[in-house]
Length: 351
Length: 177
Image (cartoon, rainbow over the protein chains, first blue to last red):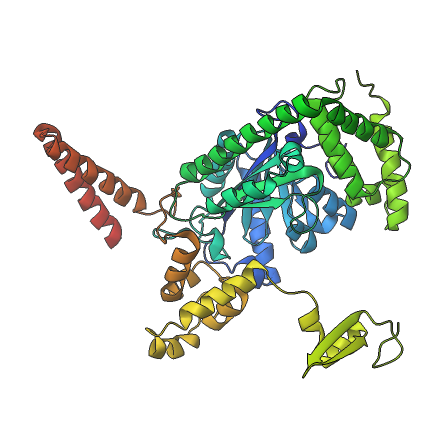
């Protein structure tokens, strides 16, 4: 299957550590090529030069040559949006797609965005909580690229980036957490405050503003300068460890006190996903979150979390539109979405 | 509801004004609201990172210690990309790696405000890292030397001292070339 038609991405596997709470861990390194204008003021010639230079390096480096180079100019709007829904490129890259590219490893766990806000955004994305491995992967790709590229770098400030908020290590680590029990026990507010005080940022992965549809939260570091990569990641994993612990506690309290209520929520959600004829993406995210909680509290068996992760892509407006390959009205989309979800769940019977 | 102004397009912008306790309501379409200057206020507050950063840069450049220098530097251009300090203030983004040198005075306080530090201690690239590796190693050895002296391990201290001397020579040679 062509890479642009696939739904799956490596982070959706359910065999990562702590996947009951942690969906995925991501590392991103911002790098720029020396003596070239940064992307936001670069002319066509400079953008093309970055693309050509990076392409040559990829093709001439034995350990990178397997990576696939995808020109965003060659994709349809739905195909670009689908890459966003699979978390393989940023929404910004999909919006400013001219003279941009993404370079993907075969398992989609490593990627390089070319001409994003910085010339290079090296990314690794793994299922569950594994910052250390994600950092090793991104660091290795960085070493291989750096063997042939002169980066914009200063001894004092470190890696130089278009926005000074990324300067220094250029490292952004982020971890996606599923926190349905903390949400239902009204503890999210307290957690947000604590996380912010540690110099970390937290936001809902889906949904608008502060509302996190589907109980998915993303925590990432804000500071990139004056700390080593290891310190930044230790700070993040340490915080995540605490939140994982709290979420597990909240789940067991909920189960102990309100077992029938929780079971009811989970089975209703599953029943709706399996049978609904009209599904908005918001409702779908909420139901998927409830089923996910059911899987990891052993309420329902026979359905794997990776199916749930795939569903999160299947319900995205990008995928629903892509299947029909045309712009759909929101009503048409909701009908089609319900059909696609039923199709995906048709072969599954829960125990 | 139609626009009060053009009476053609549907009103989507509703402005309530209270002046001297007199409340008045105006309903406008997007086009007329933009023309009357209401849209920028009523719509889309712009809080992107770049906007907020631009505010921070403004604040630092207005610090009284640099008044004369500033007026001179405003017209200063980065020789590689042509970016001016004014552009940086407006966009919150630098134009190229060289800008970090060109606008260093303004950037340092900003970086400290953003990150609590303006000194990189993370990864060093092998190709363009230059003698940064050596300098960092020198710093480590000096710390070890002090520890060795404090704990009276003079043999080890002498060894470390020789290593530091050699490193200093290498660093000097690196700086010359």
